[in-house]
Image (cartoon, rainbow, N blue to C red; front, top):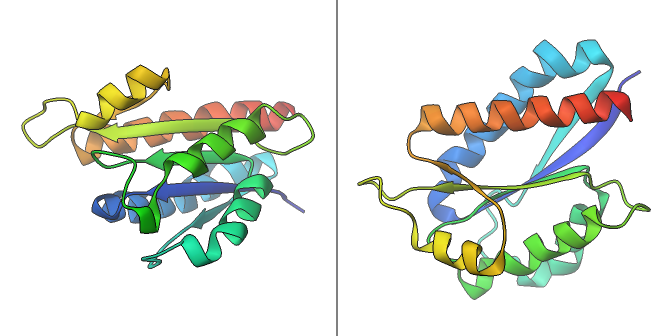
Length: 158
């Protein structure tokens, strides 16, 4: 039997391709690395949900139940219908609470098409939130792979 860990991937609408790729990569990671170690990572996301406000309580419950949280913001925290700042701060609060399963919280920030930093970088810097920048899908895949491998190492020992 596998130990299951939920991984919440929150994304800006403009990063739907990256969210889909995250799910694909998580599936492959499960098959190649997590399952042989007795673990199974289950993706959780807001796919196809334009306005999460009516479901915010359910979103919060899902974040609290997750082992890891990945944020893929756009150039800001997002529109009111899908604002991500509150969710990210909840994930941080959950990670600080030893009674909850949350262990890892990460932000992957896409650079602008001309490789300049996203305007969101200044917002994250001002708040003191760490993040990893990616420019291409290959950079993104590398960042996700490294993140999953770090989490797997910790989760195997837990």
